[in-house]
Image (cartoon, rainbow, N blue to C red; front, side):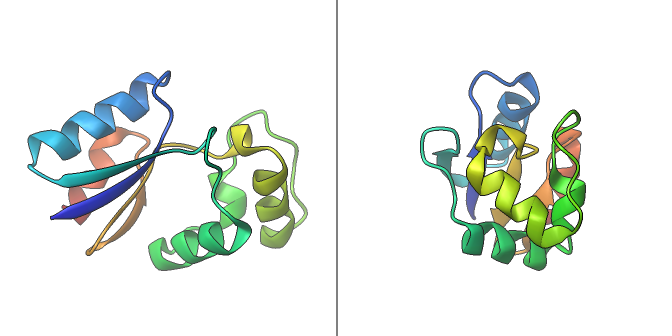
Length: 106
């Protein structure tokens, strides 16, 4: 199974999610989203596919967003506000907080 993870190697939760993917035998594409930020369109696609409201995918402490469009704009302007890890497989998209949530799409 193929999987893509928006990953921050400094984040223990993100590392745990990556370990779950590896242990499951997934062929993982790792995207260090701080070095290679996703586009607004890519974020919108991922959140739509996962049924995730972009406003709910902002990290705690991020500036408040008036709506989902404003949340996406914030994420593009400052990728550090993107909640991680975000995992996509052929079965769907999940925020891996806690990491065990990604088991539903393996």
